[in-house]
Length: 137
Image (cartoon, rainbow, N blue to C red):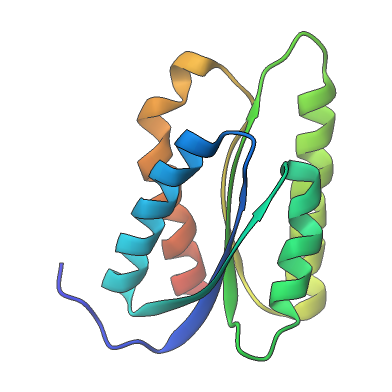
């Protein structure tokens, strides 16, 4: 796909807990952002999913950021902790978009994703998150 002229600046927020998977997703985000003409001006690593909304908010409040892509994994565990956490994180992300008026493309796998489901979903979810931001800009 031919690269488009850069029109908008975006940031990327990702969790360091699943570093290898996030690196794979980040490389895909970088590639698709270039193809879409989006300039990544900031990449912020946070410990896990609960820290993502604050990092997203800080980016969305920056004048030089037009949108954010957020990446992560919330795996199925022995308890419903991941499901509850996922619901809280997704809800916070939606509220941030509505309050600030800038888009967030969500590339968070889960909640309750199984380990065998992860590899085939990394790149498609990364691509979809970038394209969601592009579409909303």
